[in-house]
Length: 268
Ligand code: IPD
Ligand code: CA
Image 1 (spheres, protein in one colour):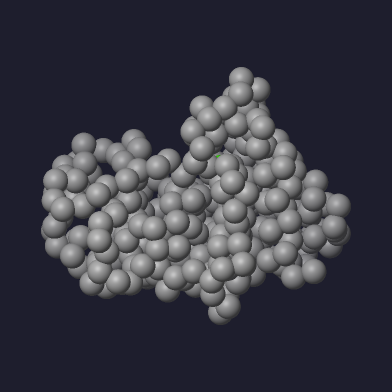
Image 2 (cartoon, rainbow, N blue to C red; image 1 turned 90 degrees about the horizontal axis):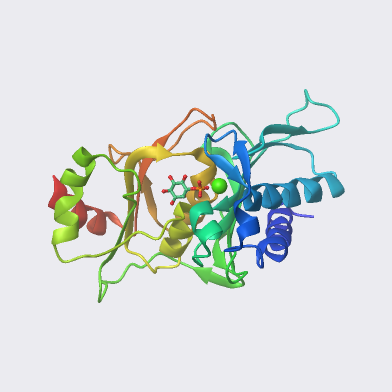
């Protein structure tokens, strides 16, 4: 079985398990703080357990880096290098708990302890079951259809900006983006926003809060790149990072250099 098939099957199982749970009182149950630092909700725990159970069922040897469960060694010989499965079983937990139909399961596989070693990725829209996925060097897909970022001059310029918990300083800096000729969007699940950007639905996606965790962007990292997008850090240099739980990032995903320059000339 190819690694991408493992990620896809794990996400399908999460979809089947949680599709009727979102928005119910049962979704919200409080399990204390997870490894990523947020309160783990019942829907998060249920989704993670579904992935972990499946990986154990098929004896998939790896180190899981889960947003709630933390580091879990799934290996009969722990010293042997097996790669990392980076899991945000529910990205957009607040949407999922409240029943806003915009949340996803984000799974990535990396051969080494850094983003640039990610070889396979799957982001599943848990409201529809649609899967965005990519394998290194093979392109990005939406279900069976190959996808690319939007490179033509857009009729409406759609600018995704994550403003959740942004400082007043950052809001001040970004203010021209909201004022000028943009259609700004903030949907509440970074991984799914990166996937939709990769399908050409957004022209640029900006998260300069310095808050995003590896689990939230690992799968999006590969899907954006394989769809032809630029993925940059806050200094507009190529994004890379270790996979540590301590790491918090800022990033910009842009369809091309021209779009990046147009939007950033508004705020600089
Ligand atoms: C969150 C979402 C959200 C972003 C937060 C993340 P979670 O992930 O990606 O869009 O603003 O910073 O923590 O907690 O729902 O997995
Ligand atoms: Ca999560």
